[in-house]
Image (cartoon, rainbow, N blue to C red; front, side, top):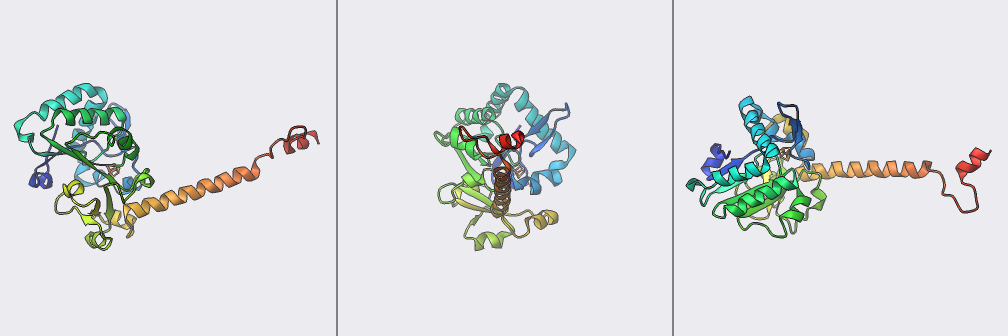
Length: 259
Ligand code: SF4
């Protein structure tokens, strides 16, 4: 179940993946493995290139099916696989695509981590609320994580306290912002300074959409637009709602009806 690509092999990291964001399994079931994805899904590296190859997609979907159909069985199988000597002292990245999409799935991973204390685990996640509730109070000692911007829970993050990762247009923009690139090793996302900068993938139409922004600033724009729209709708409702009834006096609507 655990795999390595060239970059991860070079730094001794193993990887577990789910299909990115939302889709449909061959049996017709729909899924969303990134329920807190925001703008990131518009420029999701894992919905591009090799991730879309049928063999890769089928592998990720098989992983998801195992989790959905038999979570206790999956947990046992993952603990069993991690018992091999080659995983002792190494790192496992939980998801290079997908996220901790449910409480039960996250709790299952925490059980795996506690059962294999000689292996280290790390993850990027946008599931801020779920981690605040289920991980932060008592994290496994062999688990590190970084909250990544570009999700619907960005406003719950505090860059002065939380370990956070943001995607920047390029390496120079990371440095100019005073953040710290993880380009040399993905493990820097959890072992380096707590403001983690990720240079954007050089995919032309993604860079065009990013338009010089970071994921954090882009998501903040969208959040502000949505808030303004909600306020406008609220104002409209107030303006058109009937005036409250004062005891003993007919409401405007009643007066109109009476007339
Ligand atoms: S959370 Fe990650 S995998 Fe999911 S849609 Fe966003 S960028 Fe893609």
